[in-house]
Structures are given as structure tokens and as C-alpha cells.
Image: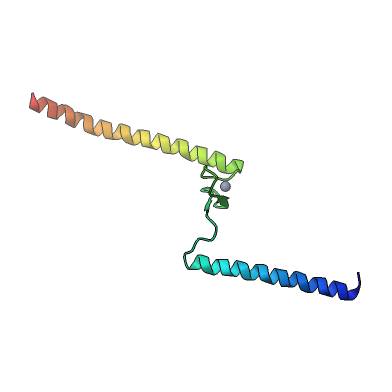
Length: 102
Ligand SMILES: [Zn+2]
């Protein structure tokens, strides 16, 4: 490769890079205006972008999956506790009302 060819190649690569950059900045500007240019969502654990077509809330990472499962379990336990607590609170009231009505 001659020197002139090298220079020409460098010029074209920088030109294409500049074009890419301008496209990116244009996209960023659009995003700032509130126009979504690429529909995507983020992993709830590590918040890396994942495609919208992916139905799970997390990425393919094992750590994220394990963390998500753990959170899900504790959330279920918490909701069960909540229902039990509400039941304990409400059942005596209902029983009293029933007793008052009869
Ligand atoms: Zn993740």
C-alpha cells in the first residue's frame, strides 16, 4: 500500500466515523426532544438495555435472574403476610358484626 493510498483510506474512515457520530448525535437530540428512536427497555437488575421483544424484565445474565427470583419470592411472602395480617384484623370485626346482627 502506498503512502497516498494510506492517507486516502484514513480520510475515508474518519469521514465515515464522523458521519456515524453525527447520526448518533442527531439521534440523541431526537431523544432529548422526547422522540423515541429505538424502542427498548432496561434490565431491572443491572439496567442494561434489552430489546423490547424480550418478554422477561431482566437480561440473560445469571446473576440478574437469581436476584430477580429472590426478589420475587420475598415479594410473594410479603404479600401473603399482608393478606394474613388484614384477615387477622378484619375477621374479628366481621364476627362481631354478625353477632350484633343476630
Ligand atoms: Zn441484567
